[in-house]
Image 1 (cartoon, rainbow, N blue to C red):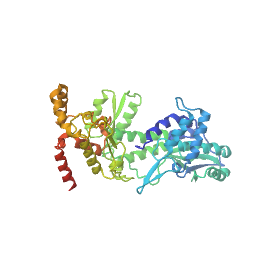
Image 2 (cartoon, one colour):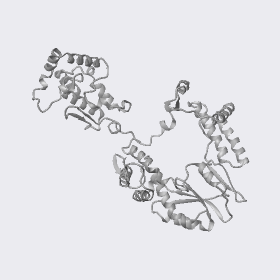
Image 3 (cartoon, rainbow, N blue to C red):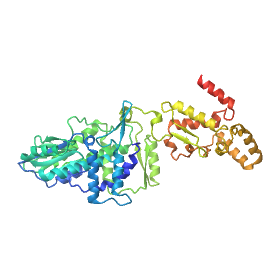
Image 4 (cartoon, rainbow, N blue to C red):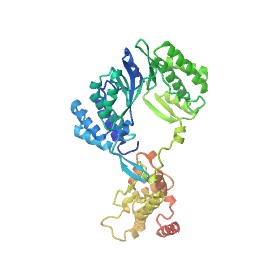
Length: 481
């Protein structure tokens, strides 16, 4: 999410997503799939089959995808705004160029959509729609409905083998596997479709054979609104997924057993369902939604207070099993993370601190502190412009800095005020915005440990040798021992 092109890919996707909105075969959820099944019957010589792409996102040919986007821009026209077709293609190439680290080595990804990029889903959809435009006129199925890479098809039995051979011959990268109906049943998403003798199709909720009926426990450290939402969601599937009375009764009985096994009191389930029916008619108009960590009792009280100011609170659990147990990647070195300070530039000269010691955070901090102390002999409590070397400075300017300070204090009242303000900073106030750009950060929450440690180290109270070169040399000697 913190990759250099993440924000660009997100904005670019919003600009060009209109290119895929007109597909009649693509669906976004199970509800759209059920809508397409309405009034559809299946004949004796037809069969239900599911086509699934093997590793779609890692199999997409990027060059072909970029060519397809260029063709769609020609046919649909570029989006509104100053971006031309050439600009969009160039930005798309930039977003699809990605690198990754493996065993300490960096590699460029040559095939497949970038993992986690907002543009990856768009690229996969573009590739699938291009394939559909190529093969569907020859296959001519009765129904072809696709959710990303999972496709539900009703087709003539005699055409099935030819169809799978044809769609696998279009691209060397995208290959399909096939699953036929078994005992007149076929699962698609969380829907189980059953072919009836009269040609009609019965639908109900589908669960895998390995499903353990484990849901959010009633005794878990989650707000009640999360548990109520779990109840409403599962019961809502009865109305959307089950199209017969028998399947609805069967699913309702199973849900009550599931909630009982997970510790839900029956009265809590009933109250949640009644609350769902009463809140459907009235929708609350909130101007803003904020996310806060969940702390039992305190979060509920905070939500009620903010609700009076038209602010909706979304509770976020602080600790989850996924956060504790899931560690798919190794930890990055602190100096290799994003949103950190790699360079501190002085406003009035060319002096700066570079993160040349990348492998040692402590070494970088010590190096940076030493450079600043060399550059600003009087420490952080002095105006930078009085101590930055310029082209007109003599070699002995550094030796006269302390004398210049005393003269300024005696002759200029404004300097006295400034010195007083700076002395207040020594006592703990935040100031010294004029020292270097690092103190102008607009996002202090995102600053990493290295910056925090460096900022603390630069405080004049932390260094008694701020204006004493001998004390500084003594510090160096002790450090190097």
